[in-house]
Image (cartoon, rainbow, N blue to C red):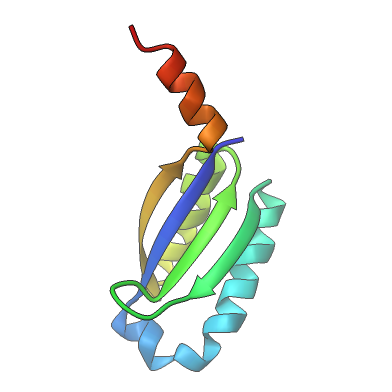
Length: 96
């Protein structure tokens, strides 16, 4: 299954209710699991992004879950497809 690194920034609305952030994440986690997405880890961070979430699951399910989450107005996302070292070795071995 594909893995994704999701960089999260809380919106003004999300920051106004930052004390609810852990509960909002737990609700996202439950929704993601129902859709077949495994949340591997989550970190609250300092710096350019407020959170980093690492997930594994089907691309369509990931897109739907993030669209739903974005529609609530508490966060914006930048999502990156992640590859393991073994996957990268496979890509390199196919280079002409």
